Image 1: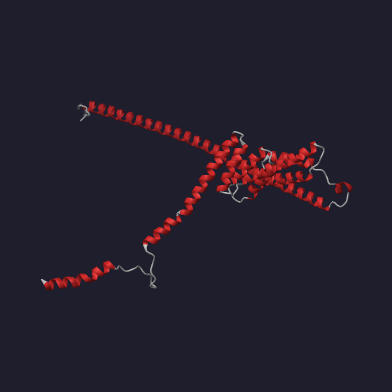
Image 2 (image 1 turned 120 degrees about the vertical axis):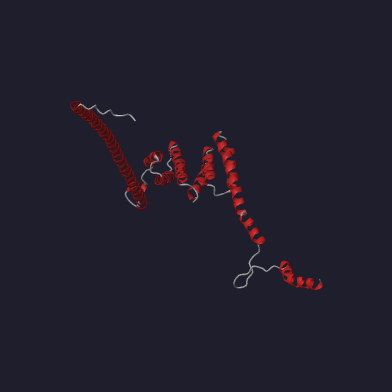
Length: 305
């Protein structure tokens, strides 16, 4: 018994040592790999930015919705505070920037509104529609300033030029903005020629600006013409497709009609053929009966079984 116990201990000794000190995973160069608890910790750590981003998105969304509700109730001051809370969570949130500008504009805080509209125009995350509306509303603020100056006997040339620039930019983003087209035309009518131009000298800078405006108008008209041509081409293509579809439908109806007529003719021919076969069988029966009668033999009776 003692010899068997000794042999069994010698055999199990390597396995016991392996269980107490398992080998570490190594690369081909002998470098140890990280154990699974470290990998698990890293994966949990990588979820932290997502949680933070999700929290920020929720904060700005909730604050902006509250601001929109206040804006609908014409509580502009409360709306501005809510939008500020949204921008505190995410200073680059273009929707809160734009809505805050609208609220400031309603409170006649033109400087704050223009600053926020300018931020939207320079915000790369803002949509083209937001930038278009920001330029259009900025143009309206400058145009109202010029009109207020005119009503008091003054003349605000810089505001008119600023309005014209913003309206042109808005039209470059959306050439179908009819309100921007109308206000641009009005601002140009209010813009007077400079003193140097009226005297006929020293108006190089103004001439350059005028040429620049004319070139922009020309480019804008060309773009509008291209848009119209493209729309006409699309309309022509649609008309051709509709015409082709109508032709296909007519052809299908005609084919169905012809198929129906062919089927009717086939059935009629089959019916006539069956009738001819029946007549022929009856004639043959009559001939055989007549021949049998002449020969004195009884006629053959066709059986039904």
